[in-house]
Length: 285
Image (tube, rainbow, N blue to C red; front, side, top):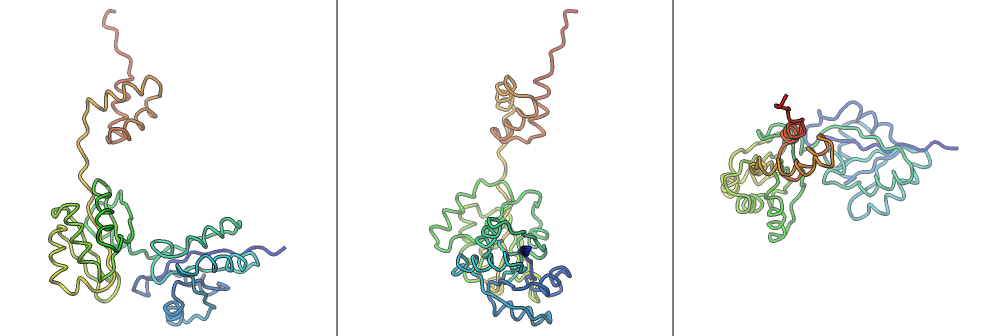
């Protein structure tokens, strides 16, 4: 019986060819076929790498049909490498339907990690990176875009957004209008390329800059926005919530539930849970 092949999800450079890992090059060199978002773009990448491999297009318009074909190849023992035009596949790029079909067929799926514009921008944005929320592209239509931004207004994690050059000014204006002009942000443009640029400031400042600076409106951009300030936790409310939960749950579980209910940190909730659960000293002795 033929051993099935492996579906490799391969990250490729977002601009600088030197960012391609040695393992990624090795996988691309020996793959039976490479599923690419744009075969013309990926053909040039392979040419620069000195590789010649069969290419099949896989994009949003043909992914369902192409997934079935590629799964059959995988079942027959062929290794398939999935790449996007730049960065890590499936991160605001095609590939999800192929991945699901491969998993359903019992095919081994293996990541070949590497460049990702969202993480690259976050690492140098100057904003908290311990907790973040990746939103990809905002809706294209203005009304839908503003509604989505409004839904994110209370998000306390750092926001990561992708934006196209022809919408960057409008998106920054909407972000400033809905989230507040004073919210800190960073626009990372043309990452790892010759004209890599970073614009840091308030959303109001960046929205104004986007109108007057043509360079900011050139190339793909990542927008990093500071999360909303967390509402102060009411200590009395936390204690009251824990008082009820501790009747039925151990301190660790009660603390976790109370933290989610009140918005307090887990450490604070656990410390209060231990204090409230501690036996009261008997002063009558």
